[in-house]
Image 1 (tube, rainbow, N blue to C red):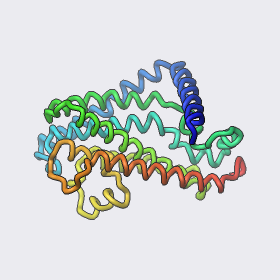
Image 2 (image 1 turned 135 degrees about the vertical axis):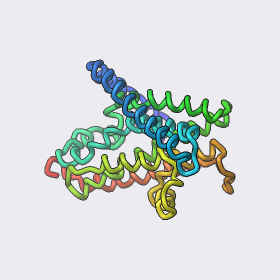
Image 3 (image 1 turned 30 degrees about the horizontal axis):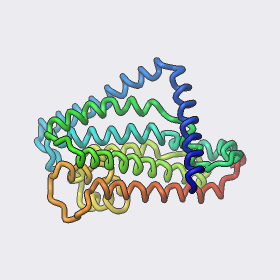
Length: 271
């Protein structure tokens, strides 16, 4: 892709994002309501983890301090994924109701237009409690603030966001074959919470292998965070956060490929 084309796509993405933000700000009280609701939701969830740790000791070998850091990282990547990819939750409806027609009329990639059509400010409200818990966790684990740790945290967030987005795109793309509005958002959301907010070591070995290799959700937070906190020595010379980013990039590319294959089966409003 030429630099001129990249600049063109970037300008279109910026224009669509700006338009989406302006439309969201038309209803400021709804945004405020989401801020309050999400803060309560995530803070209560974290308080529940603290109650469990205080009552029963460590969770899968992880103490309260490291769990706070893990939980904060998970909520942050969740918020970023919601900002950029929440529209993928409605992909089945777009297939069945023929809403991809308007994208096909424009001289740009369908998935690109679809992803940037709706910049979701609601996801930012998820990141507010995430930042609170994250900085609290940083203080509790006495994380050293240096360029290396900042880079690893950014890689972890980028990789986790891509993995979440890839799974959502994959699930939404299945509607090209099922021709159904049924989606797996709730099930996938539950999996994300169970795997990214808690240490993988609380699960049986076969489950750990499943979420490491077959459905690599453990790379959202568990392995990168364990590496950042230096909880165990790693035999792999490459930082886990870098591997997690690579896993996210590969998964995202594969899910985009599945979407393109699915578009060949798209039947417009007749779907």
